[in-house]
Length: 140
Length: 495
Image 1 (tube, each protein chain N blue to C red):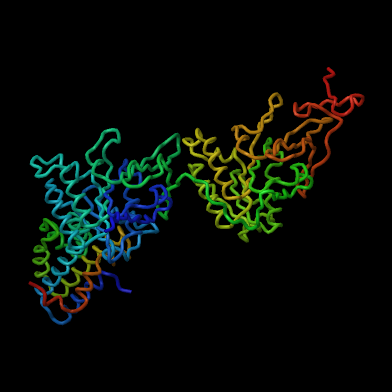
Image 2 (spheres, each protein chain N blue to C red):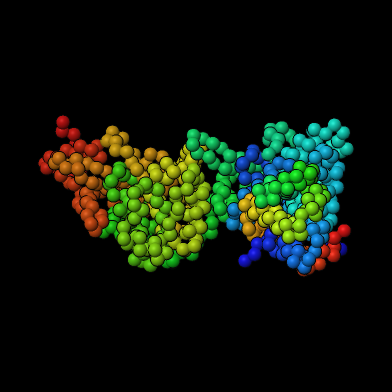
């Protein structure tokens, strides 16, 4: 069974295989993270989301060392511009994979803290939004 | 025109025993405070009430403020059985006010609360922890509104939104009057008292407008099921037992000859104390009492406090327990209170419609109690015995009796006055042998034997023998052979 991260990431991978360039992948990724932030920050506060996001960047930098720079650039969680910049500089496939790893680290962290069922519950709105194949049209 | 009064609906809190302590439940739309030191169960109490009452149509809002990080709170609270993940984000919305609180501007915080309340139309609102609100307000140099104004506005707002509200906080000393207490309709104070290596949680409802609560401290326990409050047990209407009980009906004891000594059996509904030294056969008599009950088709409840390597009480009793003819009270929990045991006993008597109850022994019971409850042991016991009596069940209690031959006593607690009947067992020395004797000391409102009878214990149980007519001074422990010329009843000292 696929987990919350895989479900949210599925659309991004779809984009990547459809030949979207890195900039489009980066935009789609930022939309995902904004939705995650919107879903979680009322619950655990902006600081809570920022702490989880930065920790996920830290955990993912082993495979994607260039993510370390993103952590330094992210002052607070609602600011995903440094992530967007970093992803846009990669190949489309690499950007998609890195975002997948980041999402995975994030949901694993959340799952470790509050368990599977509550994590799925909290991220429900995010994957509902991103599994219907419209996210790329909502980029701004 | 009729002048109908407003009816205050009382909500069932979902916390075992709490509705009783509150005097019938939580008044709807009340503005409450849950206070107490860190770690005493405030957040757990709030969550348990919230999960019990919140619905999708009338949801709950749980505002978290600085204090405990929300992620940790969710992590720990979900360990409880009452925490249903499906309710989160549907019937229950957690909202963090940390960012709004950062500036210390209470007006901004109030604004945020109003916005969320308008968005969700909640039936329940929680603010946890309120101490953070107080502290943030103190830090702010230019507070736009004071804490008192904030609380008054919040109270007014929540009442008009028809939301039952809880402020949670580890704040204020109870001696120092706080304006917050004046505004509140209800004040729940949680405490934990530590004595030696025991810890006991207690709850007090210091205030609850519009209804009379059960006053005083009530112990509670937190298990994986949540909070369980032990309200003082009160006499209940008689429970319909497995056999009819005309008041003059008597129970058989299951020991041949003992019923005759009691004047025809133990009157139903009586409490009986069996006192005797270690090993004299008190538990065996209790076992016979239970077995006899089962033979007559009656159910029983047992609370055993004796520390044994094996929990086995013999095959017959074990079978009856396995078949749910005898209910067993779990007495292994640490730091017990008499009220807790009494609550469990009454519930089990009710469940099984039991007609016989055995407490073996009072001495073990006292040792199991948290030290803080031992001082009140006598009063609590008196309450428990009267409550058990009110159920209509017949109670048999055993009590360890220190062997003292210079002083005739029946129980170390002065519990003798509590019981309707007393049987005492003693060791005596006769012809260089240790023999057992027993006597019926008291059967209220009934004739009974006054004989001191020898008895033996063999594989069939207790076998009551004859009166030791040839000796006298038995209770002094050193019987003397009686001079046959004195004749019966003419025992005088011949030293």
